[in-house]
Amino acid sequence: MVEQDSTPDAPTHTPGTAKGEEQIENQGKEPGRIDTGTNDEGRPTAITTARNSSSVNAKEREPIDPAMPNMPPA
Image (cartoon, rainbow, N blue to C red; front, top):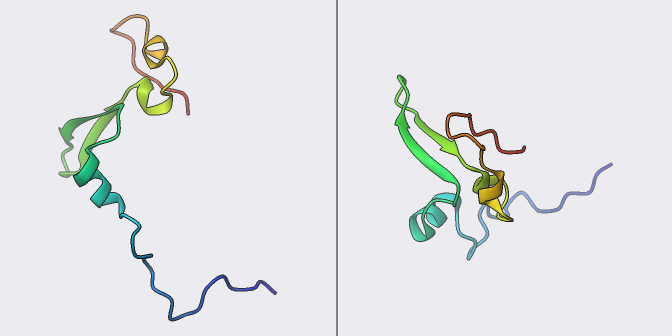
């Protein structure tokens, strides 16, 4: 049987830990993510650059030809 890590009455959020939406408000979007608007359903759309996947020589990992799609490593 698996031992529980917490109790049922434990809080779901640890005080002092910023939530994801708070980090975006305070620090801005992560490097390498560019908003492109919304789709037909009103959901936000975006593209990513090599900077999103790697901060090491990110410019060298961009497509050689600007017409090529940007497919950063997974």
